Image 1 (cartoon, rainbow, N blue to C red):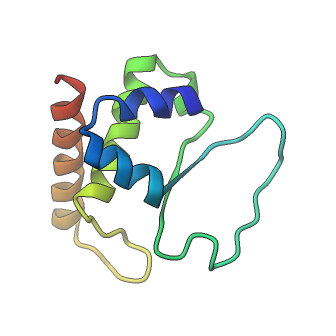
Image 2 (image 1 turned 90 degrees about the vertical axis):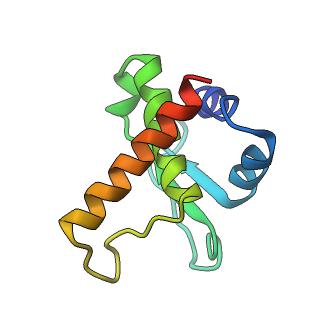
Length: 108
């Protein structure tokens, strides 16, 4: 997972890489741990991207696209439905924007 996240980050401008590496946690199922515990202060003001084992079974291009898509949500300051209700229109707009973000950087 670490190698794939690093590969995905290489598609981004340096300033964006710096922001992501300081403000985003990437989590997947590690080989050496069954679970994680975080205190609220551990990730306060940070972003958390969870990468599923199922995603990691996909083709590398698809994995990198998905990682960039999720980074897009962070960089575009999208909200999620935790704590408030979003309309389908808002969700669809955010998903389209995150997809375009990933596409933009994956092809450059």
